[in-house]
Image (cartoon, rainbow, N blue to C red):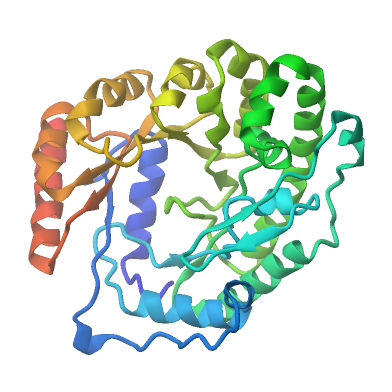
Amino acid sequence: MFEFKPDYEQTKQRIEAFWERELIDRPVVQFHLTKPLEEWVPLPTSQHATPADRWLDAEYQAELALASLSNQEFLGDSLPAAHPNLGPEVFSAFYGCTIEFGDYGTSWTRPILHDWRDADKLRFDWNSPYLAKLREMTDALLAAGAGRFIVGMTDWHPGGDAIAAFRDPQQLALDMIDHTEEVRALLTRVEADYFRVYDMFYEKLRVAGQPITSWTRLLWDGRYYIPSNDFSCMVSKAMFDDLFLPGIVNECRFLERSIYHLDGPGALRHLDSLLAISELDAIQWVPGAGREEFDRWIPVFRKVQAAGKGLQVNCRFTEIDQVIETLDPHGLYLTVGGVSSHEAAEALLKKLERWSVARR
């Protein structure tokens, strides 16, 4: 189905088993492995005057994705996929936030809601140039990737993260006390807009014959996504449960498959609330820079698995034996760093297969 992934159907079956917390031959495992330099396709050269010009050049971004994916090998369950990307605050830009584009793959917006009395003036702009650009970039990727690679959705960040962009995270932290009902009302309105824009791109991708994926390289033929609320590290469990949890539950009900992006130790206080969402399929735990050691988070991993949820674990190649000693392969999705060669990749896959046979 995809030239860059001849064994796509086997990987798809493993991912389907992951969603059901079942096991075919081994857990889902993905890693980055590049081809030898002598086999590389040259990357397109940027002649853009500004970072914004480069970010917004749909044809250039599609050519860059094609060349970059051409230079990788997709062993295990690694997927050749690309998605249109204007940065993590693009959803907020649909309401009027201006995106500032940086040199090194980062973008950001500035707050636009300075007084809650103006909240009703915040409206989703279906004629937003950023929305039009995402459609253009999706079309360009679909053309470049036809028969070669998967095209996914952008990084949406609706809900609490969108409102944090409208207000500024520190200001929103105060609003959680002083403007609780205004926050609640805006969350409800933003949620409805998000479902509509999600469906716009869902239909576009499905009509083009694509499975649904995004920046987390799982997939599903129906509605799949990665609910998140990075702002949640700044609020108490009680505030999270009152204001944000209902929207996350609604998002999980809207989706057919979901893996929650739990980002940073400050967000761990919300884990129990998330595990109680029956419609949520899995948890992606991201501890943050400087805290990545696998053994540090074994109690968290075990708690997720004990709750009957799927689990994504980011680990190093040298930590695989610890993974095998401490976790259950059922419903496990591994993203492994430090896989440096074909031989290392094959050794990793065989080790995981032997583990799975022993745990069936």
